[in-house]
Length: 126
Length: 109
Figure 1: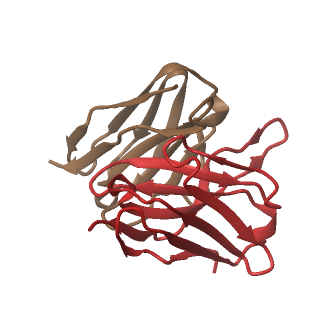
Figure 2: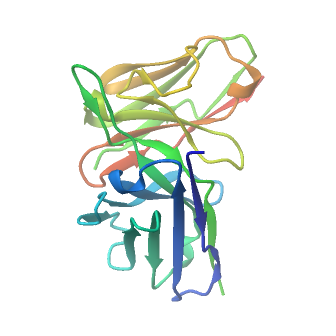
């Protein structure tokens, strides 16, 4: 079955750290760009970070730049998000998502998210 | 920064009716980079439409997307009970690279 499964969420104090994992199965993980997207309780979706298929290029939303680090281990089919200096406003469900790609005879489409995990909740509170 | 504004915030309709959801961008968006998602309570989002008008795998043909430039629309031709959910549009562009609209809640009237 094609799926993504996140883990590693929990309760952490402000200023603390947490590492999230996302394990992929059912597809060739090493060929896909991967993302983290978060959703605060009762709020909308916010993109967090992206990593290229070989891990060579990463990019972050301004709100997490310098505090979060995305990485991957293609041998383990696993995506990671290291979160440091956590703040109350980082409280959210964190989803890992696969970047889709589709090419027809005339066009190629990317930059959308075609597979999502069920998410893991991170709560930052004292 | 491109801001996506979805309207209405809440749409109340009955099964069998037609739903029209709007997504307006603060700047022009490439149609290739406009997508729509459905999210039900407690679940992850599900991709419906990419490239503004292409249905994702397994999405029923009652869902359709259209638009260009700054105005995009998701239409559900005849609502089924399982279609009541929150819908988000999403674009790829300049900083931030990926942005979502605030969502439209489609509720049963």
